[in-house]
Length: 454
Image 1: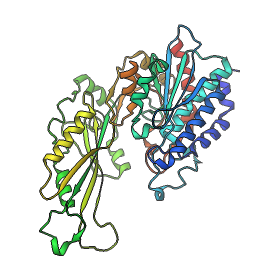
Image 2 (image 1 turned 90 degrees about the vertical axis):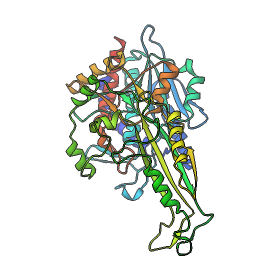
Image 3 (image 1 turned 90 degrees about the horizontal axis):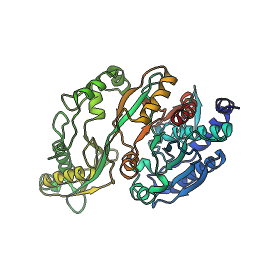
Image 4 (image 1 turned 135 degrees about the horizontal axis):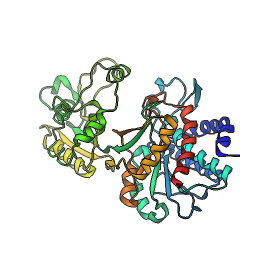
């Protein structure tokens, strides 16, 4: 039996495994689900053992665990680290889900559940490919290590120290990441860049308690008004960030890079219609894709304070709060940017309130790799075979923190080789994954590992 037949004959079983995996509510950001994140890791470890991988271990990280496995019996061949994550985003708001988020449903060739696309369906595909190759051929074409984590959705906060402490175990020639996707159902892409991330919370406090607006309105600074003014000072009318030094380290695109992005077809009208907006908004002089992929941002992600109930309550609130994140691009450092934003907020604090700024995340360093990297070229060949088209050299506005960690600590670039699509509502209600791409991912990983052996 060859690996192709092995995969074809087991798709019903593999889909059942995916549904079992998706039923585990492995939400890494909520402490009450810590045991579920670990349970998902144990589930992955059991699958790896059953597949025939060796040295399988659920490793402690000081946070949510990492699952490791290897098969290292291909002398003279490359060593590839396969990466993915088994933690998921919270499912809120539950009222917008058409079916319960952790009770997966299959409809019209799609499986609906939290984590279906990001990243459980994608990361299970290479695991099943390893199983197929070991079962059909008794060996893998190259040396393989697995690194599947349970904290990607919270920024992988304990992984820098963890990877540094285990450099020898994770040493590899390069990484294949199952946390990624393709441009479309019929159009592949090679992802060569990711934005970084930093995050803060700003708390504005006025009087010691909520006070009567008739007694004190006009005499005290209202923390909500103060916060609104403070947030408004962060950007100009076109969305360009006004924080001093924010753009100092930005690596500007070359003319060739801008031309490369410009050749990628982008249906602006269709995207606007899908999003339900009349127009795009952002920094002048850049296309929508350039703004989304290679320009830094500062966004207010949440704001709260004062009375939230029905009707009217005439109070002047004692406090107001906001959460802020910045997406960063090549050469920007999260630690520097977060301090610049903090200094701006403190410098522009209105009178009559106390402003406290707290850094909420460790941050993620922006990532870029050469399109001509041998791993990219090997992946390109398989994508051309699968899709019959050249892949676009694309970038992503999102962040995968571990890519920069692997590059810094292992000296290993990460080749994105996932099969999710942007319309699959990752991080949103009614997330789904196309089962056709679940099958395609298994097949493509088998082909890629064979290709790398050559």
